[in-house]
Each structure stands twice: as structure tokens, then as C-alpha cells.
Length: 68
Image (cartoon, rainbow, N blue to C red):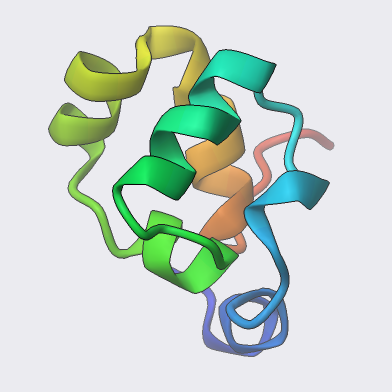
């Protein structure tokens, strides 16, 4: 995790991430409202609970972006 980016993103709401409405709802039900809370989840748990499509948003919440 890149610290400056992750620290900046941590307090932002997960609603800023490109997640489906259903995924947003499920995050809210679990009390996960910030990118920092979402980023703290283990990658395998995100894939299992919120579908593999959520892994890109999870990486972005962690301050990781593999695009050039």
C-alpha cells in the first residue's frame, strides 16, 4: 500500500468508488463506509463477499493503481 495515497483516500466515502449499487448496499450493511475501512479488508474476502469485479475498486481504495 502506498502510504500517502492510502492516507488521503482513507476518510473518503466508499460511494466515490465504481461499485454497483448492490455492493454499496452490502458494504453499508456491514458498517463499511470509508475507503480506509474497505481497503483494510483482505483481498480474498473482497473477492468472495463482493465479487471479483470489486477488486479493482479495492486496489484503488488502497492507493494502488497499475495503470501507466
